[in-house]
Image 1: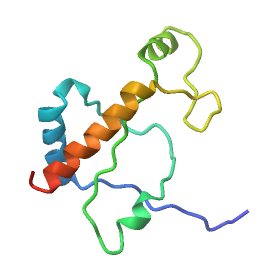
Image 2 (image 1 turned 90 degrees about the vertical axis):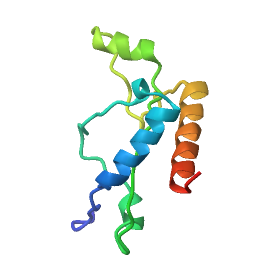
Image 3 (image 1 turned 180 degrees about the vertical axis):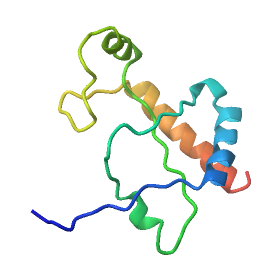
Image 4 (image 1 turned 45 degrees about the horizontal axis):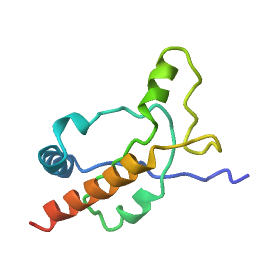
Length: 113
C-alpha cells in the first residue's frame, strides 16, 4: 500500500468550457448537453498533462448507457454498472459517434475553422 499516493484535481478552464459548449450547442444541439456534478472521488491522469505548464483544458464525458436502462434504474430496476464493471455496456453506435463528433467540433473551434 502506498500511503502518499494522490491525484491532482481535474479542473476545467471556465472560459474554454463556455467557448466549446457554445460550439457544441451550435453544431450538435443544446439538448445534448447535460451538466452533472460528480458524485464520486474518482481520479484521472488527465491533470498530470495540464498542470506544468498550465494548459487551458476541458475534460468532457460522453454518455453511453442505453436510455432504457437509465429509465429502468430510475424506476427501481437494476442499478447501472460503473464503467469499471465487467457488466458495463454502452450503445456504441451513438456514444462513439458522439464522442468523435464532439472532438471534431472542439478541434475545429480551437483551430479557428
